[in-house]
Length: 443
Image 1: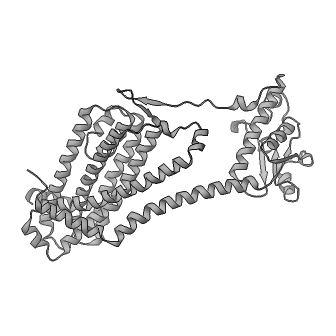
Image 2: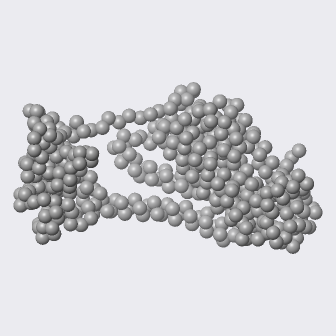
Image 3: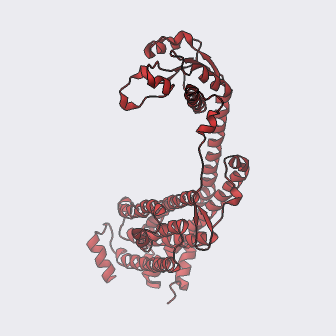
């Protein structure tokens, strides 16, 4: 039996055209992505500008090292980072409390207080910060005092200079003079690449981020359009022509038409958003290709799993229609706007569960519980795409998951139709669960 009869198609067309022509749809479809992209560009501009301003702003850094362990080396490293640094000999005999009091009247903007340490530990660990469990006070910890807020760029430079100076001092204490501390502190990077059965390479970090982003986007869209569907069903119940409509088509046909029609509006809007964000991402990656290349990231070498993306699209669309059917059924049980939030809450909580489960599936895609959840229709729209991105999923698993999801979409429309058929006669009250179950049995 073909569920999409001419009557269902007419309802779909009516719901789609009615909402696409609204000013709200045009404003949110075009305005939201422009706003988000604009905020992203503005944030990047402000970050770059603040870093530039911090680099241009000259601040005098005084280095107080009463033990003479790393003071001169630290000044050299700070000067190498284009920071103004001098030995603060007039501050070396002061305690932290006294230095804080005198800093405002000194010529220093920042004051690095290196503690005086005696004995073997001072010779082996110059400039090191003691562990918290050693019970040492503030006067025995390396401290940076500042007269104003310290930009993160300057703070990072000071931390790096202190670390390099400490390493140089340790090397000198054992007679090593010519080794660059930067080469000793440089991290060894490596990439984790997942390899499919066909030999396709997949970057683990990229697909983890993609899975999380898709899950968050799906959750966000359902919250927006779930409310729209509930209100669309409520408006239909409150209209004067609902009895005429139900007499000319079956309730499940009306529900399926409204679910797919409103769902098509959401899918169209998501497609526009995805296109705008994809163009912004391509432009941003292209503009930042040189910077990424310096960081060792070659965007041209990142493979695009088109097959997985197509499957993901079907799972998201079917999952969207499934939850839309549940929202439609919930809307059919109420008679006023006040009850809308209450009936939506359980479904919203149900949406959160697959969102949470996705994070675990990304880490262990072949775990037994993950495989089971990827077959359950309420979880599969998010869990199965996460598994597809993370590992090679057998064909029978994603095919079975997709079939079950499609069956549940039709079942949700059928159940919502039976609830709606009885619910249109119930005015002024919200049905409880036992009543809804009776409506499903006898509707």
